Image (cartoon, rainbow, N blue to C red):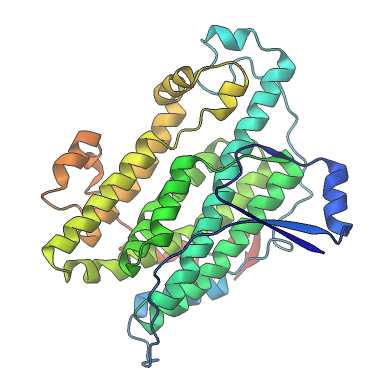
Length: 368
C-alpha cells in the first residue's frame, strides 16, 4: 500500500537505515513517499522541425546513448569497504583544534563516516534537482536537438540519483537533509519561467558545482567503489556542461542588454552562494564544534581551498564564454577573487577524445 505525506519543506533530521530495515524495504509492500510541492509557470513548446540543426548537440546526444552505463550491471558493488581507522589528524584542519584531541578513536571514525555521508547526501539531493530540471528542459527547450539531449540527460540524472542513494543506503546507512543553500538554488532554477535561466542555473552553475565536488572526492576518497561511481558520474556531467555552454553562447548574446544583465546578476548571486554558503557544519556540530569553528577550519583547509579552485576555474571561463561576464558584473566577480580563471579552458571547446574514450569502472571497459 502506498502512503503519501505532503510536507512544506525537506526533512531536517538525519535518516538512518540499518541492515534489518534495508531487508524490510525490499520485501515490505507498504511504501511511504514524502512529497514537497512546488509550482512553476513552465511554458513548453512543440518543435515541428525534426532536422539536425546543431551538430555538436547531436554528437553529445549520441555519446549519451553510447555511454549509458547501468547502476546494477556496470558498478562492482562487491568491492570491500576500506578498513576504518581512527585518523589522529582527522579531516584536514581539525588536528590542531583541542576539541579533536578529546574525541575517542571510535568517535573519530564516526566523524569521518558521517562527513562522507553528509557530502554524498548533498550529491543525492542535487541529482534529484538536476533530474527535475532536465525533465523541464525537454518541454521548454526551443529546438529539436536540445529536446533530445535534455531527454538523454534526464535519464543520466535518474541514474545518478539511483547510484548515490544505493551507496548511502548500503555503505553509510544514513542520509543527511539537503543543505538549505543548495535547496535555495534548486528552487530558484526549478520555479523560474525562463528556459534559458534553467540552462544557466543547471547546465553551467549547478553542474559546474557538481563537477568540482566530484573531482575533489575522486582525488581524496579511499573507497574504490566510490571512486568508480564518481568517475562514471563525472563523464556524464562533463557532457551536460558542454551541452549548456554550446547551446547558450549564441542565445545569450542575442538577448537585449538588460536581459543579459539580469542573467549575469543571477549567475553572480549563485556563485556567491556556492562560494560562501554551501559549506556544511552539521557533522562538526554533532561532535561539539561550533558553527564558527567548523567554518574557519574548512576555509583554511587545503581541501576547502582546492574545492573552491576547482569550482571557479571551470565556472568562470564558461560564464565568460556564454556572455555573462559582462562589464557591469565583472567588478563583483573581481571582489570574489575569481577573475584570474577567466582565460582558462572553457567547456565550449569540447574535448571529444576524452568524452569518446571507452567508459571504465575499476579499470574494466564497460561501454564502447
